[in-house]
Length: 263
Image 1: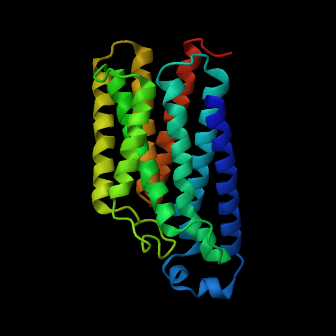
Image 2: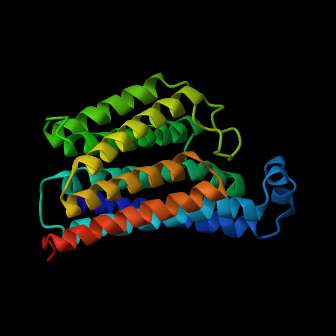
């Protein structure tokens, strides 16, 4: 399963990185029609590069590398790192379909309709938040549930959440993604992420084993980093998000090495 998930994630990542590369090249091609459009009048090319495209590239690449390390070096076939994290990393990559409207903007070709893109983006956000919350509760033994059943449950719940969210054909009239999520939806996702962070923090405080405490810290950093990168489109949040996410992933990889479960 991890192999299949990694292959799918790599394919999606390559497609999205190609889309980003093409979009950036077109934005910097000095096309007068693009530069005079209302969207480009409100957003400079540099701000778009720093706020949208560069953080997206870094997050996608970091997620793929983390998923690859988990697939090829983590021996255990059970546990949170083996079963939940690969799916969450895939979901974080899929969420960047939200950049497709920029491709449509520069190429005048519609890859996916606005409601579909919006639905996929909202699904990925609630799925990731619930996934990290489940990791936190299972780490603290507050949730006794088969991991496969839990993953299926949050998949169904995420689909249900998207189905009742007010997503319309006007959700992506312009390719500016900073205000796409519905306010109530964003609050709900943030609340779930806070629950996850609080649960991880409680485990961090209660745990006496140094390795397990580092494990909790790694998940806290990854949760915060993912939240910053996916929900707050500004330079400061993007820089902090990349630092937190990459640091958390590095800690987790380092811990798996110390547990001697690597090939």
